[in-house]
Length: 390
Image (cartoon, rainbow, N blue to C red; front, side, top):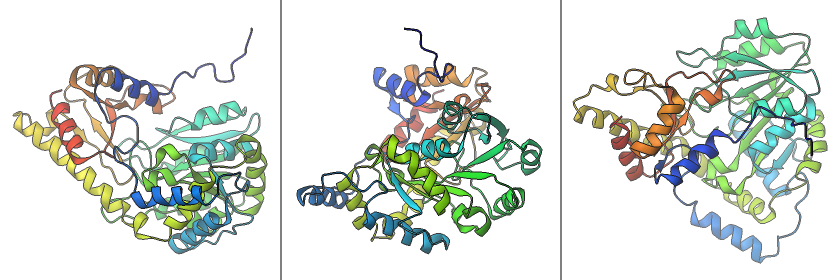
């Protein structure tokens, strides 16, 4: 058969490749972003409860009302924006599906979509598969902040959307109130839409707060706000997220959603709705992961010193203000590409990591690797010890 591929340059994702390599070489997996502990027993019992009560058939296409109401209340309390549960909130099969659905619902052939690099790996395929044209804008390499002057230069009459990701995967940077103001100025009076990937909204550090695009009067009316239950409740395998957007955008979103997945897991929706009543479960998440980050950084610095190597001769630690990912700069110890280093660390050192180059269109190495610190303290300490053998 002669098949003309829609994504001819795309193969298996780097996350799948590195996780498979971790299994093959019995390496500690700090590559793929998932916790190595189970979710809360109470949440498991709630799922079982609703299964036994008979909530096992199709949920409403837009999501069960209880969960949409809980989402609406959370967003109103945290970000001051009310979303109507009937017309503005949709429960999805994970944030990745929500991202694909949002992009598919508005991007047509020839439309340009601004993407900031390094970029999560699903954005570009989503754009290309809909005939869109990615417009790449690098974040400032020193601190991964936004270059709004460059954004202004790149906007054209064909600009359909801008994708924002904060807290940012893979860098851990955060969008600021100043960024919000700049984005408001840039988009005001235009038809430009925004897809805001906020799946790590509850994971911020050092006293910093997540700034949702829902909090902006100007931006909320043009934005798909997307988040994830998996990141919040340590249930990445349950694949459930949501999209909050104004009615006109939600109408287009649901038009595609109903044919992509129709509806998502019914008993889990009811369980999340009940569990969300315990606000501390997500409000305390940032402090929980901040301690994880600190354990890893402390251990890797101590391990380097024990080896009579100043930290600068091993890894330079990039600032991480959110998510559960940390970037390490290895340029002082090796001139190898990040792909070569990732393979070496997995096979020879016993720790699987993610190279940063797949997050860029040019695929060039920048001597940076990403590790996931959503692991037990014991695993983080052992991984830090092993990494310091580089």
